[in-house]
Image 1 (tube, rainbow, N blue to C red):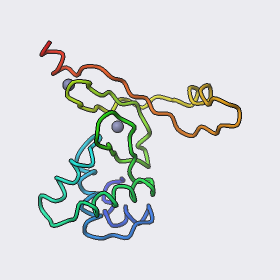
Image 2: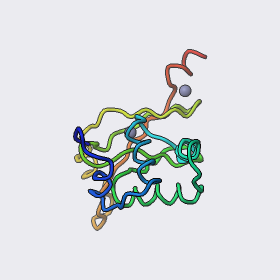
Image 3: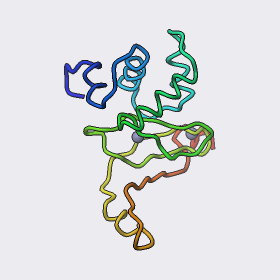
Image 4: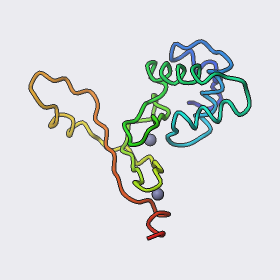
Length: 143
Ligand SMILES: [Zn+2]
Ligand SMILES: [Zn+2]
């Protein structure tokens, strides 16, 4: 988001009408770095206003369809989302297998990999996701 752009304009760029819940959802992602699970988003949004769970989950899938959010293929019971679009390139993620913490890693060019991995000739591969799994520094220290 360029400096000074109003959240309302940000939504309309993605073809979304501004409503209070949508603005709250956008605000949350703009001010919380990294990926968040759907339950985390729900907890944050319902802490200060009355919103139904279904409304929040519907907004998450709508934002994802419109390209404002990206849904990540990570382990765990919950879906992870992060801001997409603009200069926010897809990037690998590191996930701790003990505490589940997710870290966004530096974007790397995956086009070569995508070209080599497309499988049968008629496939049209559009996206590749990389998830690294291991132990975060906190969990390593616990031995
Ligand atoms: Zn950990
Ligand atoms: Zn990320």
